[in-house]
Amino acid sequence: LRRAASATMLVTEKLPPGEAQRLPIRDAKGKRSRINGRYGQVAGTLVETNVEVRCWGAGDWRRVLREASLAHATRLRPAELYGYVGLGSRRVNLAPEICAELDRLAYDGVQPEGLHERLLMSLAIGALAHESYHRAGIASEPAAECYGIQRLDEAARALGARPAYAAGLSRLAWETYDQLPRAYRSRECRDGGELDLDPISGAPWP
Image 1 (cartoon, rainbow, N blue to C red):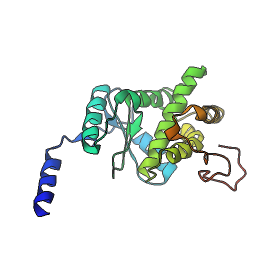
Image 2: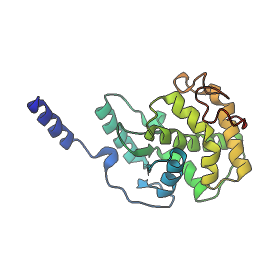
Image 3: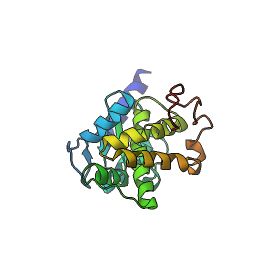
């Protein structure tokens, strides 16, 4: 057992730094990898715990996912993954395109009206909220998705969206909920369901 433990520690020490590598802390938009404190604050408010949000550049994102795939014995494809939280990690890792959308809202004040653009914005904010719940210990994909949708309005407003615009993004997320992959949906994601964060308030769903 001691030899096995020593071997495991040696292998771990030889692994690349992956998501834990040092990154600059920037409250600004950009294409380079960075820790964004503003997004971390929004995420932390949603789940009431400290959250570090890492926005990855395109090249770094591919490398980080390759390393994470080795560590978790699975295949994480950059084109199919909007974000992830490593096992036992407090870091939320977001794909470049997700952070690009968040940057448009938070730093440029862009609130697009076209359906496709609103879908992209809703998806990006939803990804931030979704991964925040994983950081808070929610392992279930349907639960994290459902909780994230319910907090999407709040997250959008915290990022600078007008209240009416934020509410519209939330409605859009719910209207397209049935189009999500089956692994991200639950019959309990409904008004009064087991995944309703506020089942007794009588507030509009979600």
